Image 1 (cartoon, rainbow, N blue to C red):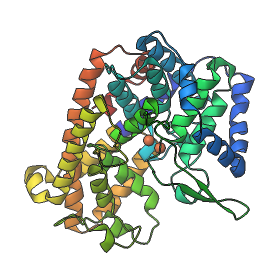
Image 2 (cartoon, rainbow, N blue to C red; image 1 turned 135 degrees about the vertical axis):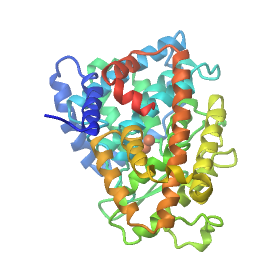
Image 3 (tube, rainbow, N blue to C red; image 1 turned 45 degrees about the vertical axis):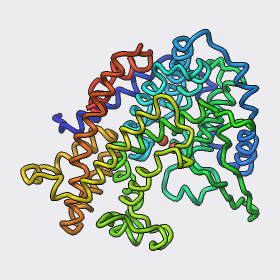
Length: 431
Ligand SMILES: [Fe+2]
Ligand SMILES: [Fe+2]
């Protein structure tokens, strides 16, 4: 049977998962997900776990994790991450089928790449931080397998906390051979990877209100937990640059039912974004959200205040790319030559489904969202397509740079497997 280019590509993507398969499932691996699901159903138990986790004595745990050098730490981290991915896949949870388009295989592969770029050649990062950052950053959205984004704000347990619990259970498998301290710190980093600096107010099942403070980023003496911060950095690098307009556009698929959906997609950037106090609370448009992201990547923002080492430069370049994309949205008539206008819609669809999220969910979201965009007024439609057009070029630039940097560093077993099994998939994400 003939398959279309996209279907063929999607099939090739699936080999990313098959390449991670291997060995026979043990009984404890098979039973693991029933245990995880039961544990997640018990909200009070989850909240108790998170409250204990957030007061982890990070300094004491760190003292008990030692590697002779960063290469050894990387190799061990790659081995454990690959094993965890294999167990997830064998249990039917993966980054292709079970994730929403914003957090699917594209975000996963770019998080892997950004982790390697961020950790490469940075003398400020100790081997123990390398080890913890690698596992936690590559797997940071593992909780999304269980917590979809729709209505997440109303849930007691968001995906970051669910992720800490999932990883806590996965690490109980004998094959992990991880010390209790390493397990605790990876759960700590995944549990605290979301950016909120405010406490989370949770209405528990009994009707009582429970306030859970955000995770600390430094010890009582002001010393930064580097591995913890770096996990947030990896996530932020894919929530910035040329990528985020595509990811957020696909994410908006989850918002289609809202009454103000057309307004949410409209463009308010001219002549400048609306002041926050002139908006109805919660009415931030998608483009205004991107502008907010671009203007908080600096040391005066709590989201970026502790950036150090490679992150400073990489993040600045990503922010510059996002500002160029927003400029193209704001000035489509200048940024978009008339010669490319006719093909922008098709090129946008290809970019979204090949590079931003080459999963089945990504393809569905891209088709539906582009249909919605087609129904928008010409001015709004052209503004979006102009932004995507700019983003595509900048994404290619990022991709070339990323490949060049990856060529300079020792590649680990996980990357070799991703690449061998899914040449087309990885090459497209790095297109
Ligand atoms: Fe996340
Ligand atoms: Fe993420």
